[in-house]
Image (cartoon, rainbow, N blue to C red):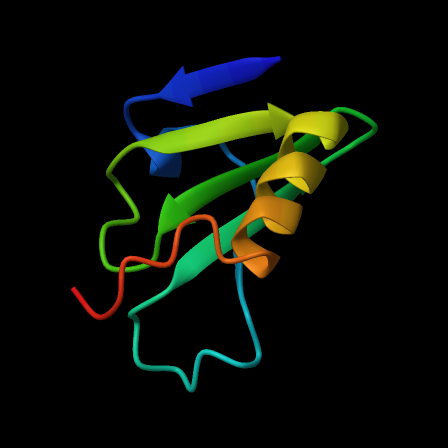
Amino acid sequence: MTNYYADASATGFAFKESSYSGGNDNCVEVATLTREGSCVRDSKDPSGPALAFDRAAHESFINAVAAGEFDFGLL
């Protein structure tokens, strides 16, 4: 399952910012979906798009990030 939501604020999901973000509104927020997985959005644009992933897809993404597969340097 991977779903796209054009307006994350309309989903009703409870998005949370990482405690490591420093509160600078420059991070990805995550909402945990019961049994289904999780949903992510950009903290700078809460009414912008969001993506929902099943547990396996999100875990695969986290592992790829940790392995440096998306290390494009500072943008």
